[in-house]
Amino acid sequence: MENDKTGLWQQALQHIKREVSPQSYETWFLPVKQAGFENDILKLGVPNRFFKAWLLDHYKDAIQKAVSLAAQKNIDFDIEIDELESKHEQARAKSAEKRVWDFSAGHWRGLPSPKYISTQNIILNLSLSAQVTALRRPQPWP
Image 1 (cartoon, rainbow, N blue to C red):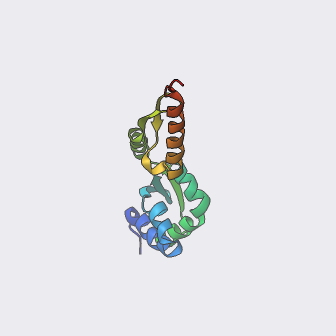
Image 2: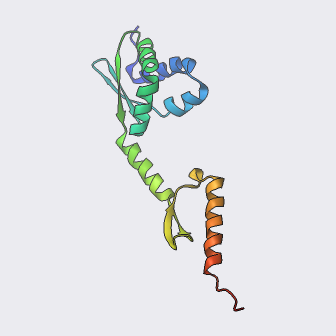
Image 3: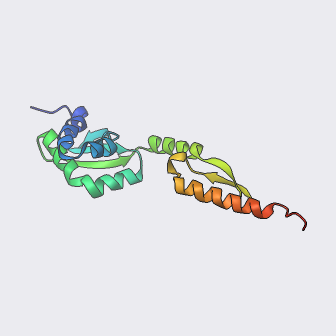
C-alpha cells in the first residue's frame, strides 16, 4: 500500500510520540511542519536555526526511524528553516523589548521580555537604585 506523501510527517509523529517524553514531543516535534517530499527525501520546516540544530543533535536517529517506518521504506529527511516564521519570531522578540530607566547608569536601556527576568535581578536593580538615589540626595547641613 502506497502512503499518502502529504501526510507522511503526521504518520511519523505517531511513531515519535511513542519514543519521546510528552514534553519533548510538544516542544520539539509539534512545531515541525512538512515542507515537501521529493526524490525520497522528506523536507521538514522548522522556525529557526537553533531548532534545526537541536533536532539534528538530539533526535536525528529517532526522526530517521520514524520517517522510514511511516513511509514503509528507507527514506531520508532534510530540515529547512521556515524564513517567514523566522521573520515573525524576530519581530515578536523586538516588540517584546521595553525601555526602562537605569538608575545606576543614569540613562534609558532596553529590558528583555518579563519571562527572562528573575526575582534576583529585580532585587539587585532595586538595591542599586536605592543606593544611587541615597548618594544623590543632598545632605543636611550640620
